[in-house]
Length: 173
Image 1 (cartoon, helix red, strand yellow):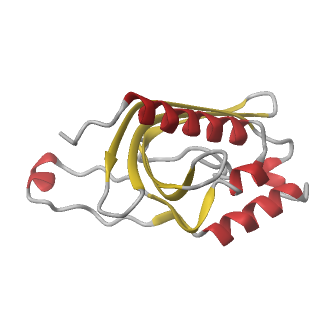
Image 2 (tube, rainbow, N blue to C red):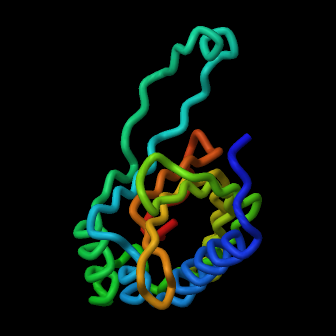
């Protein structure tokens, strides 16, 4: 178990995460980009099903990157969404980012906290196009002297789904 943090710090971190989720849900992508640190790594790998006997031996089937983005790559994704020419997002998706089970721990890096959350991301588009993404996310937050107080410098997204049935993966987690 990690060293406990104060309730005040817990409150500040969760409010930051809720604010970030609202920006994504409201398509306020430029404001969301302002929360990102320049050295950000935003990653998601494929999820594979490993047999219990293999996991015990630390044998993991190979995975591949779904996302392995830097801040500049995310800026280009946002710029594309803003053009109205990103056909995967016409009409724009309606999303809800729901996070829970927030566990915060210190890291060896100065002013950086590790935040593990479970998430549920719902996406609706058109009349019948609905998708649910469930998983866990580990964020690295760096203390900043800004209104928000924190900047996102790392995000590792792990989906529970081994097979993604969505026709595209154009939403931001």
